[in-house]
Length: 174
Image (tube, rainbow, N blue to C red; front, top):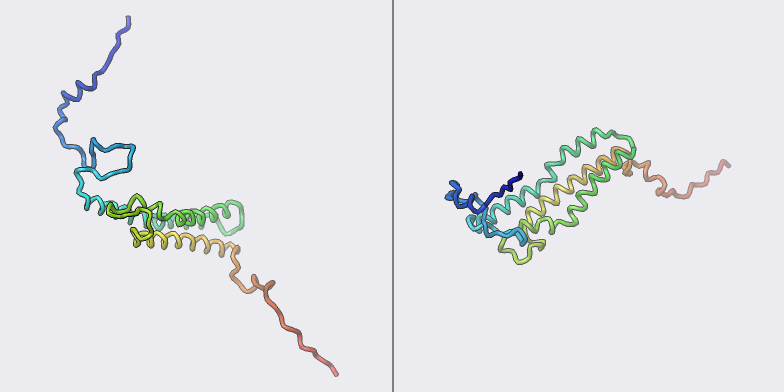
């Protein structure tokens, strides 16, 4: 003999003792999950733009925050030229290059609500410059590692094949 159990969620909603509590900050029942994200009704628009600007600064300095760990990985990989070291250096330098190629798309969600074009270069210019500087710093650490491994021509001996010599003077013994 089996009995079917069912739960009526509608009855739970009407008898809920927590029903009179206000919604959490930033929550709105009318906000759809399918469309672009909109500010919640309980948050003023200027406060929402300030929050987006703060998140843009956090995003802009994120590459600098990960730099100590990446430098430690480069240090621990050693100075030899092995496939592991080359892979680490390649990934270290490829990430910032890809990030810089998509800088406007990366900052589009943080654009203020008053911006006409969210992917324009002029929106959030200071944050984009900080992001550019942090990524260039990461590329610089990668180039330093390449130089310490001997992969970059840094000394005069590296340029000897391209050096031209003048005509030797004739020396006569008589």
